[in-house]
Length: 554
Image (cartoon, rainbow, N blue to C red; front, side, top):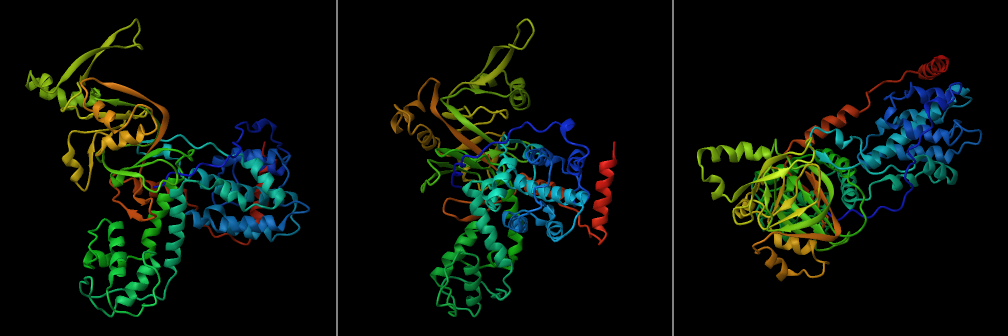
């Protein structure tokens, strides 16, 4: 995954919102804002976006911004375009009341109550869309699985909306709120491609009824060629009628096999054929989940970055956003289901060569203490020592005993650990158990991430630090004493859960949902979907009466 591009400078929203007591109650717009409910919207409760919506109207004296005496038809049409195209960003247009927006724009001779009702409806729908686009529809911090990512700062929606309405450049708001991560942009392009493929009806079903090997001839080969071309793994060819399973086709099939975790041998057997029988709509929900996750990732400044894709069991390290040759290696992650490596975004601050392992109390009690109870020499044989620590939080002082394992061949942290302080107390580290990296599935740890090539990662981290090169790193990793090295420049570290993932060569990969997080995210998104409601012709009267009730409420 290429490093997310740096975010352009954008104004950050002022958190001060008009106090409730200062919102005019004798004003139709003020009444709706105070209620934080809208009778016309499919999702009536707009509490989640009420602060920026209030601020928008505060800046406009609680007067309409869309339905003004000299309203801009271009702005209104641009709004319809923005919300109608929500599916291009893996968002559902129904959630933003597109049909209501279209109907309201065509209304004429509205009284003040209906003008207020429609005006706020348009604003709420747009703000919902922009917030979902920038931050995601689901707050990851409310997820059942471990997430340690701070929310991205909110942009000044009120200021930006006012500016773009005045200049009639409303569609530019999308680019300002859209995530800047290259992973997101790549997924968006692929989503569009699959959406187009789903609409294709002119390509027949590929069913050769026998195993195909490189060099074979078959009448179904032209259909295979069309399918691979539409899937974006084969360039269009003038030789589209050929029945030969040639090298170009073989390479394209290998790409598909690799993306799906199959043996990339170019042989089209039952497992590979099943991939072609899948409808293109099968991939779309997975890409949409990946785009939702990509919206959670902060937009960092340019520079070095390390990313672990948990379900792929891989680490990527980039020197810059456009690094053509990122460092890539296998990793071991937390064991499913109860020792999951968390999703996080932190900054690596230091390394420790030949580290001690401060054994977590849970591991000591469950795994080490029972062995020590049956073998008096067990702790000594494992280079484990008991150390007394002062407890600064204890009243009047106090201390407690902690177990730690001395540096050496038996230490599970190996010869180096990479530390980015975080609440989950996880880090990257070496391991003496190298054979485990040969396993296809590598969720084996207590939550930390073990790296297969610690020397190369240390070289990456210390690449611009004076006094460090390949030789000095090797010496530090074989020394008899622990050495703490503070980084001159902190390096962002992302632990990411990407079951659908685009690599630096723009290749799409699908990985098993080892922690079941796709299903959890899918359920959370389903809860947010708008109910399917059929609006009657009396909806205008409903909105009018409900708005009047709001105005008459104490």
